[in-house]
Length: 110
Image 1: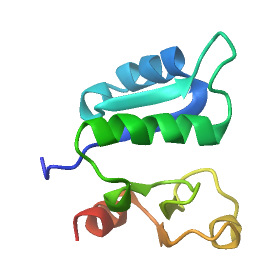
Image 2 (image 1 turned 180 degrees about the horizontal axis):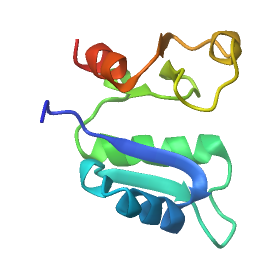
Image 3 (image 1 turned 90 degrees about the horizontal axis):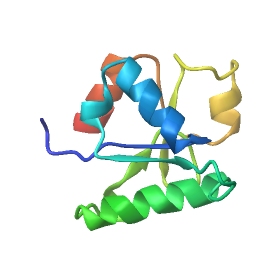
């Protein structure tokens, strides 16, 4: 609603990522869904992120205006409500750390 393009970049196979998004009824929020392939291609995280960025660029989203919940050279947002151990996000060098979805929303939209 705020004009942001949302993407998922996962090391899981794309087919399963789509099924997970559909299961939780959130697939409609993501314009780009990229994962590894069942044939063994695009298995490195860097390849997955690069493909997601390529698809976002096709939608008109510049890499410089892209943030990632994760890492790999983009502005990174660590979510403390995920699976990270205490101190892991700080040690990984997250640019921002949020404690809940409301804080994530405020950061992205603020």
